[in-house]
Structures are given as C-alpha cells and as structure tokens.
Image 1 (tube, rainbow, N blue to C red):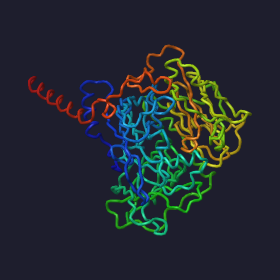
Image 2 (image 1 turned 180 degrees about the horizontal axis):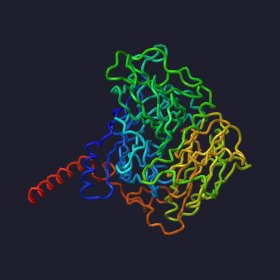
Image 3 (image 1 turned 180 degrees about the vertical axis):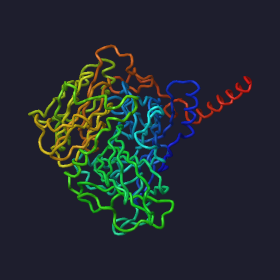
Image 4 (image 1 turned 60 degrees about the vertical axis):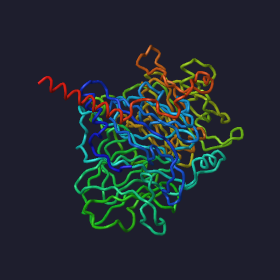
Length: 590
C-alpha cells in the first residue's frame, strides 16, 4: 500500500466533487472490498494474514465531513466477519457499527453493504474485523475524514499525509491465539512489532534476521508531513518516535489538540494520533522511525521503519533513539494529562469546539466500572466488568429491540462492582437520552487497559493512581480535557470520562485489548429517544437476520457477488457521460 497520501483528491474523489458541484447534496463515495486470506512473512516466517483487495494493511478511506460512504464487503474468509469503524460515530445509525450487538455476522462467502454518513466529524480513525480474534491477523486499514473547505485547519496545510499502522504481532494464527485465550493461556510477549504490515529494519543483526522487508517513508527536505499513527495491535502499548525529529501533536481521534512538541508518544491499543513532522535535518543519513513495546519485558525487536530524505547521504545506523524508561507509568500518565483540547479551533462545524462547556453540565448518571483479570466461571475462562462477563446473544441487541423480542437482554448493568460471585450475562446500561454520564474505569489488572466507546467521543477529564473516590473529582480538568473515543487506564489506577448521550442507538463499550474483549470485557449502552425521532436510521433493507429472527432471512442468491452499488469504475463511466453531455450543451448554448 502507498505510505504517503498527497493532500489532494484522488481521481475517484474528484469525480464526486465535480458531480456534487453540478447536482448539489452530500456526496456519495463507493468502495468494493474483498476480505480474504493472504500469505505474508512480516517477521520472516510465512503465515496467513487477512487482507482487503489483496492489500495488507487494507485500503484507506479518504473522505470529507458529511460524505456518504458505501462499502460493499465480500467475505472470502472461512468464518463469519464483521467490520467495525473505530471512532466513526455513525450518528443515529448504530445499524452500521459492525459489532455483534448491532449486526448479524456476514457468513463466509456472502457480502454485505455498509452505508453511513461521516456526519460532523473530522480526524484520524481506523477500521478492523471485530469477530473471532481476526484483528490479530490484520484486516485493518485507515479512515481519514477531512474538514470541509469552509472550515480551515488550525495549522498550515501539510505537504502530504503519512499513515502508519503500528502494532504487536504474533506468528501464531488468529485461530490458535483465540484457542489459547479460551484455554486461559496468556498471550505472552509478542514476536515483533509491525509498521504498515512490515517487519523491522535490520538495525541490530543480533535481534533482527536478514531478509525481512521493512517500510521506507520517502520525504523531501524542508517539507512538513502529517503523520497519522494508529496502534492497531491487540494488547501492547507502544512508544512512537522519529530519530532527531519533533512530533508536533495536532489531533487525536477527531479532536484538534493544543499544539505541543513531543520527542516521543506512548500510543496505547486502539488509539490514533496526528503529528506534524518537518523535515528539518541535514540528511547526512536516513533516520529511524521506531515503535517499541511499553511495560513488556521483551528482548525481541522493536518495530523500525526508515525515514529517507531525497538528499540522504547514506543508510541509518547506530542505536535506536532512546525510549522512556520501560516501566515508568508515571511518565506515560503525565504525558497523557498534557494532551489538551484546542477549544478555539473549528472542527466539523463552523462554531468553535469550546462552545460546548462540558464542565458546567450536570451529571445525570455515574458508573464506576471495575475490571478483573480472567477467571474461571462455570468452567470457562472469562474476564469481567463489575462482575459480569458479557454473553453475546444469538440475536443482536439492536434487532431484538427493533422487533420487541423479550428476554434477549436486561437493562440492569450495575453502576459499581457487585459484592457477589462473577457471572456471565447479557446486561446493558439503560442510558438517558441527552443525559450526561460520568464513567470511571478502575483497573485492577496488572496490564494497561484501553477502553473504547462506539458512537461517541468522550471527554477524558482525569486519571491517577490508586482507587477512585468522590474526592477525586477535585482533580478533574473541567475545561479542555481532550475529546476522543479510546482512553488508557494504567494498572492500579483510574481514568474518568464524561460523555453526552445524544446519539440514539445501541452502542458498544469495550476493552480494546483483544484478549480481554474476547473473554467478555464489554457491554452495551441502550440510548433511546423517548420522542418520535424520524432522523434515526431505519432498519436497513439489506439486514442479515440470525438467531430468533433467522426465519426472516431471504435467500442470499447474490452472496457470491457484490451488492450492486456503483463501483468506482462505474462511477467514473457515469462521470465521463455527464462530462460529455455538459460540454455538448455548452457548445449548443454558445
């Protein structure tokens, strides 16, 4: 896949821009994806990975605020598939969220069409397969949502985008990894760290074997690039840095930040950041781009790519740039606290972000969510939140709600840890529409945990070591805590978030650490607008039915072909016809 995306429209997007300029309305962009197994050797050992359109990582969705995105997904795997869109809010349209609470899986050999609008959002996000531990084999890619032209960037337009996917990697198959987790085995130390699906540059012959392909980022001296960096791994926090270059943080998961320089940044599982990096070095040699594990006693190689200036005088050499102390969680917490929201910058809407003064809103619900390490419950290994390990029902929650099917779930998730034995259950939070919820994540595990909420950006207002108490609120940042969709919680510590529940639907709240998520550390919030809301998306025409509603499933005669939505090729043909007709009419009118 290309490592650098120029800051200009692709041909397909130009077609869309022209058509909508002629006919008005929010543009549509169409993609056809085939998800299949590929053979790759990112760490020098042949293994099966998951690619999209024969790409690993998958293609980048580069769109603009308010565009309508249509993605036809053909499942060529040998097991069911769902794609979820990490950080894309799907305003009033949880039908497109791509998790088991909202969608029946796409069976092997079938296709399904996602259709959603990237409404009132900007920023850097990614997608990945949400079922069966598949994310550990790949299947991920980037989502870039650009500002509309009427909303200026709060910084000079960079010369190009560089998208980097960093993540821990195992040479075991995803099926073997999930079986190990089911049997109570720890994932263990990763076999390596990948950057854009590539293994490390051979910076140390003792650590890195020869013959491994690595990523090269080609740059021009004096230019400034926007590095969009995503931790797409499954369990390991990573420290990201570029030798001899500053990282000017400008955005994280859809929020412009106060612009600050960092020499390195801890990026936890599921998190995304944008940095401006200026090529201001002498280029006496190439430079290292590094992603190294945090809080892991690992002698195995870091992820290393190469930053190559056009006028470079030779290859990178010598030791990697120094990381923070491997186990210094105080450094990482202080760094996280330093990330602030840019309250004066416009984002997707013309009005400044800071017009939403979250610190002055009355909290309506408080949940203190305590995680516990995996333990045996009724003979199976399970991980819990507030003593409950989530059990996905055979009928998705959203479908059960749509058809008023009783007994599929209960709206009784406890707001604190219960003094009772842990259990497996399908228990949801009954959220108050337009309420303002405070959630405190208390990490009683020994590893850093990341938590993600679909459908929303929440305000990260506080984090500290120890046990949260009512007095902890006195330390909250009530003015410019960054709004994002994924936050880290350090071992023996807590993180507090505030979220305005204005997006009707059923939404997933989960651990992004894949082993914890797979063993049950997730729950759902049901947010129902008590008034008639015609703007909430109806049940899609192409809904797949399963569980109790299996009898409603129509024959999927087209399961081996795409759904028929226009592809980029057909869109291009349409554009050419319209263009010829327009030119012809102009000639006649002269």
